[in-house]
Image (cartoon, rainbow, N blue to C red; front, side):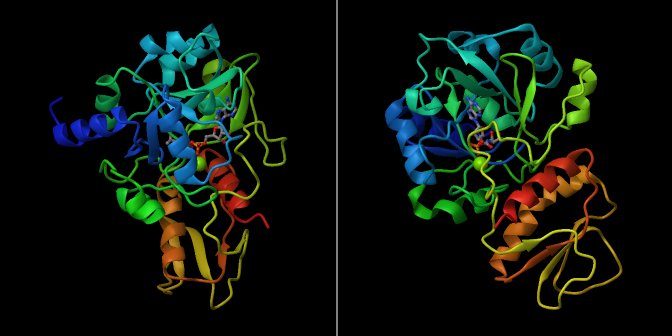
Length: 309
Ligand code: TXA
Ligand code: MG
């Protein structure tokens, strides 16, 4: 442990006492707890006000300890070698003798696992003997946090500690892929679907109208609690208007996702902008059309869910 020694030590101390800790990842901040401890996991559900029927993702440093909890297969290994650590979550078959708390999976026979790419969190994972279950560190259905400040805004003094890992690099939750059988995308996310398809030589797709396979992908989600209207060309005067790229107008109510239409940059900024609009107490959000390709697919998915009435 060279860097961030004290924040890691403090986190380990709290996690061993079955407390929750806010952790940075490359996607969004997580609300982490010992995945082997039911006492700790129940605190996560309570703090997040999350229905117990919605299972959690478990975070590992690498596959060494994963073997105790899941059956690994070739499809998984291929993607793991290509993209991990990184913004992808795998659904695998859980081993019956695994120590994962039954509350993590809601008694399901599968487990969602992920290998986050953030220096401090990887160091933390390397120095504990249990994996970390971590949903996004926001109250259920609200906007995912991309900074420590956002996490504190969600939970206030109810959270014991949050590691400061700066602003998250990807800014959108991980892509979820079920690899228990023929691969299926359960949630579009921070890893571009085209990249996955290219490496697996498949043509997996995803459609907002699909049946939602991930139990937590409810239609209303990622919501700033303000009505959102999509594909707006002429915004109303009083609304917050989100645009894909910087223009000449300097209107106070215009929020630009990027300088130059780079969709990765748009992903990094989306939740920050939504939170900012919420803080400014706008009553309506309007969004111009966002290209439905690359991470644009994920951005549109999140905006559609956030706008669901
Ligand atoms: O980027 C991320 O994935 C972030 C960071 C913190 O790692 N985590 C995150 O967790 O987005 P959460 O809890 O907000 O979303 C996890 C999603 C939920 O929709 C849940 O239903 C689904 O994963 N999920 C968890 N376990 C599953 C399982 N066994 N089968 C299918 N879906 C599962
Ligand atoms: Mg979430």
